[in-house]
Image (cartoon, rainbow, N blue to C red):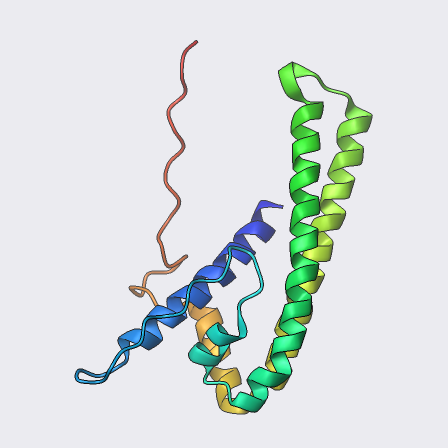
Length: 170
């Protein structure tokens, strides 16, 4: 579960990092426009982001826009369902309560929602990929492999996660 969520966060970070990288490529003296707002975490990127980082043509953008709008609704619904299921799990195990059958049932529903989210993500990647030119595909693959532009160190562009907080004595 955590690795899937981190994958989606990584993709969103990749898109944001690619936009920043593309903006940094403007030479001095060129008029710069502010970058578009970042996509929502783990959401479907706006077609404007893809157009900027991959150099989509107007025709490609027009082809992808209705698909991405539809995917956004689907992904938002799955994310809402996941959030609701996690709240139910928190409530079911509050104050040390544990009912294995209830927890297993909720865990199964969470796993199914995560699988649905992964399927939608891969559907979106395939549609975008099949819309791209060979050069754009190469660019997309390079960005995906590198995890977006960063300082050359392996791992996510923002570095390792912070250490956990120290335990508190009660």
